[in-house]
Length: 304
Length: 312
Image (cartoon, rainbow over all chains, first blue to last red; front, side, top):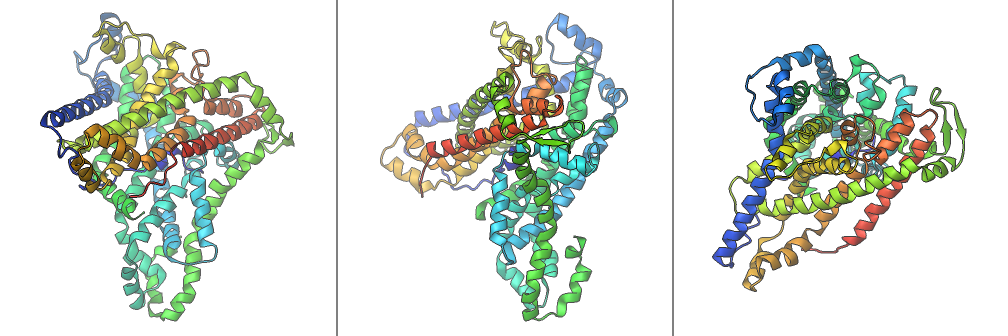
């Protein structure tokens, strides 16, 4: 399936302290002014970015009666009576647990397959000459620029013919190989010094052994970045589940939350609790992997 | 597949001579690429071609393999459809405002973070944060924020402004979704700009300072021109993303595209034709081809706009 723009989001490089203060020969008051402007903009925008999350967090701890009273009595930030009932009810009123497990299966399996396929193919495109290699590689790159919408109906028909509609494999298989994954790994392998592999090869190691024992351990930063992008993409995907999943037991979190929003339109405490729980694993992953994430991308970015 | 990374299997080959290795390389290359290539061909390359092909057929919704060749009939239908016109107009308006605002905003944020300030990492993380969340969840949170008595109207009331009903008003529904989109993606775009800013060689700024250039001059004469390739990339990503906006419009309008079709986007139209109307899958496919063509033309046009052969 052609890569959606969210997968194209090329991530940050590690900060390389090359740019100096751009304010060497400037008058002191201008320097102060620039800094005041910079801080105001940054703090202001950080505030705007966080405040909706803060409000959804406080809402999720309010009892339903208090939220409803808010429509009459006016706005309030903090709950008067803190409750965990929304977090408990989300698992009983709707099949949140099932959605969660489905999303987890889809995310984990797709990620493992993507890592495997992207690293083997990426390695071959970087290192092993075979007939037609460059033509095939550029064809793969070209599909990255094709907007994903064109494949929506074809993928639906394909899955229908493969009898994979309304199934978890139907959500996994179309995304196991992505142009972005192959591209990312290929760029990373290109940047690894060939000498490391040649040393292993002179010692008599074959391609497979060199790949498994020399190359793959070095690729950890790139594999970490790819893990994050792939898992996040699947965890958050909405359109494919929307068109192929038709029964409750196969719903993923975004699809479940969307149907839940239609059913419990006004139960904001529940909606906020559910939304925050959907975000939680990604937030944990983001915090835990951030170092690998920036490391990996800086490495691919520098030599790409 | 598991075979290629099995060390036990690989160990058997330890004794191979270099000459034999070369011969085996060709096969190794094929083995490494083939499984991925098969999936790529079936689920990426083939669907692109198949999508173009399907736009020429009338497709029976209840028996998808029952197709009649209708030539360009789907295109003539979709191109005169009022709903498609509305959807394209909504999408164009959405795309224009979101891409313009988020590009300028992300550039300003990147320049600000790149100053000598404290908390660079914090700001970078904070701005990136919304883009890791699911679009559906963000939309639900914003429905709550946009609520008549919600956070936004509370904020406005502090300035004495009586806020509108946002997503329930056809005038403000689409701008609301624009706002949430800008809110989500500006941080990501900022990180792209920041990486590029950090690559600009220091000596350029030093030289300009020695020549007495003001900070404003340095920004417009050095920073901005050198960022042109990044701007092209940021705008391209923005265009491809915004032209295909769907999730937010779907969740915010509760699957209707309303009020009064004000949030009906192009992908929304395609989705409705394909999966909500009987026998309109071919029309939907034609709609996708038209959208694809528009995205490609706009992307190429802006490539000329940002045409540069700047090297440094």
